[in-house]
Structure formats: C-alpha cells, structure tokens
Length: 231
Length: 222
Image (cartoon, rainbow over all chains, first blue to last red; front, side, top):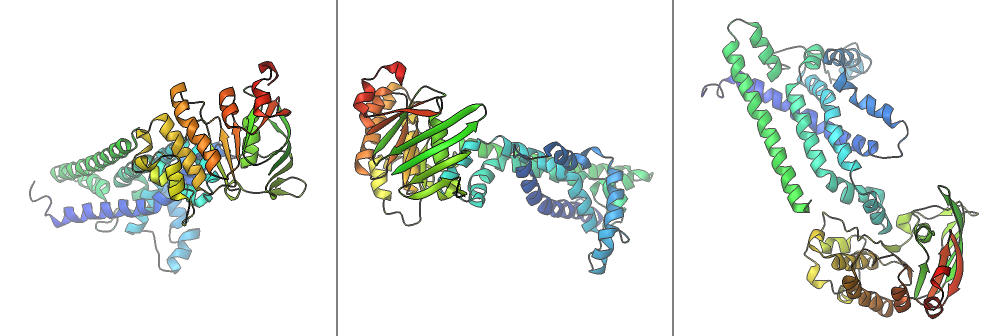
C-alpha cells in the first residue's frame, strides 16, 4: 500500500482527476450561483421549463450528453471548429474532460444553492432595499452570505460527481492515459485486463478516501456556519 | 410634510386613501386588514398603487400622471416592522451601519439615544425582543431617513417589554427631527406618541383626529 502513493502512474491519475474536478468547479460554481438565484425567483416565467433544462444532464444517459458535446465541441462541431482555430481544442484533452465533468455536475450544484436562496426571508431583502442598498449590494451582503451552506453543499456534491464522471467523459474525450484518463476511467481500464484487479482495487480505495474527505469537510463547514448563526 | 393620495388594488382589496400629515408623529389606526400596512408599503415603494401621488417635504416619490416611481432604495425612508428583521449573519454594529452613510455624524447620538452601546458586539440571536427592536429602530434612523415608518413596532412584544421600549420611542420623537408615521392599534401607544391620528377602514381614511379625541372616541368607530 505504501508504494501505491509513490507510484508515478497512480500519482498522475489522481492529480489529473483532481485537476479536472477543480477546474470544472471553478467554472461551474459562479454560473450555478447565478442560475440558482434566478430560479429562486418566485415570479420567474417559464420556471418549470428552465428548471427541466438545467436538470437535463442529470437524467439523460451520460453517453448521450457526451455525444452531444462531441457534436458541438468536437473538431468539426459548430463551436468546436471555431475554438480549434483559436487553439482551444476540447477533444482528447483534459480541458474537454473538465467540460464534460462540469456539465454533468451542474444540476447537482444548482439544486442546493437554489434551495438556499428560496428558503430566505424575502423581507430581509426588502428591508435592505429600504436602507438604500442597491440590487448588487443586497446580493453580495445579504442573499449570498445567507446562502453559503447551500453553496458549500452544492460545491461538494458537484466535486464528487465531477470526480466520478465516466460516461460523458469517455464518449467525448476518450480514455487517454496522462491526458483524459481520470480515476473512474483508469479503474474501468484496469478491470478490463485480467491482471488489473489489485491495481483497480487500490484506485478504488483512493476514490473512497477523496470522496469521504470532501464530504467530511463540507459537513464541518456547514455545522460551523450553522453554529455561528444559531440556527 | 407628507402628502398622499393613492388608489389601487391588492388582490380583491381596494385602497383609496388620502391624507396630509405634518411633522411629528402621525398615527394610522384601524382594525386589522383595514389597509394601514398597505398605505405604509406604498410610501416605502414596496407596493405600487395604480394611480395617485405621494410626496414628502416636496420630494415626489410617486406620481402616476407624471410617471414618477422612485425606486425603494432611493426614497430614504426608515422602516421598522413588527418583526425586527435584523440581518442574522451580521453583528449589531454591522446591522446598524448597513444603511448608514460613511460619514454619519449622528452615530453617537443615536447609539446613546437608544442605549445600544452595550449591544454593539453582540449577534442578533443573543438579543431580547425589546433589544432587537431598538437595534432595528437604530438601523432605520442611521440610514438618515427623511421619514420613519413604524409598522406596529411593539406588537410582537409582551406588555413588560413594550413598556421598556415605549420610552425610547418618546425620546426618539422628542430628540430627533425625523417625522414618523406610526401604525398601531394600541390606544395607549397612540395617546403617548401621536400628534395626529388618521383612522383607516376598508382601505380609506375615515377620520382625522387629535390623540385626545381619538382616545375618547367610541372604539367601534375606529
């Protein structure tokens, strides 16, 4: 077990998985906060439709999502060919893996954030408004800080989902060691070979440890926030 | 000072109110559901009447014929509701400073007036109901309002706490020059605080009285 963490091949897989998940979350989180706040608006028109659209990656077969990504962001895709021209190719690169992970994780990040905004007392916003606060100031100083527990749980759920993403990733960016082969893909590959069982088992152990650490961290942060506010 | 003439619908409820109030404390009284709070919300800009005119000291806040509807955060009004609604994640001091201009000359005066010095570092959850309501009053006053709107600020408190907060309201009336519109249905509060009393019924102003006349009027007419 000691040699497992010093094995360069294992290090590369873990490092790549973390890189993909973290980059995915950096881009997903701000967007999820905006969409979550937007969906929390009780007067939003077409709310069910937008909400269904946001949840689509959650309910669609991941392979389908991956294939749609390939059609849009692939070398010959509408957006992909343009991006390729300016040197930002998604296909067969870890950036593409991050895109797939981010899109698959998006609904899971949005949901708790939206619930956190929805559970806020709208009168606090009205009151801040009467105190002269602009819309942006009210969001920054009242709505967002009060939504932190939701933001944290969305972040953790999304990170875990991104880390474990499989179907969309392998369809969109394939399974290239050192470039797009994340933990899940590596475990899958190892399980395909007759001698890979023990190595696969080690990687599974690492996946469990990372997931557990993430969820533990979020529990600690959430309980600290709750204690601080006495709720 | 306050000049208001509004018409509008809230669901099936019709509001058609007109009143002119001076400086000092103007009380709006009437049974629950009479439309007192709706009038207050119209002044604050939290509810938009269908037509009419609202003006404070010649600042027009709302005028349907001229298409004027000043946004809530530009009206410079301090509001205190029955529920103090302190921001739970901010300390008392941060709550007080929330709407306060950077250079607030009246800080010490208001903190002393409402006896808030001891509370500044506390979190809202560690305040009693009366203390929280004093902080809410201070927060509204520190935003430098041209008018203070108090919507049954003592109704959520028990009798003992009401008696503790009432003197602060009297001091506020006597020691600041901010005019106050006070919604209540407690006769003793009205008689102690108000300069002028408007009775509201079914969305309309039905009488204008001195506090003395009001206190001695028949309850069923108010």
